[in-house]
Length: 37
Image (cartoon, rainbow, N blue to C red):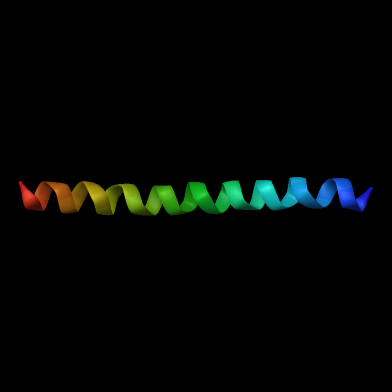
């Protein structure tokens, strides 16, 4: 059972980290583009 759950947990954790990283990077990217203009 554990061997089935483990990859799913890894994918879910990766997705959470990805969402957090995106929510952090998007405003920074928006600021940098607005400064360049």
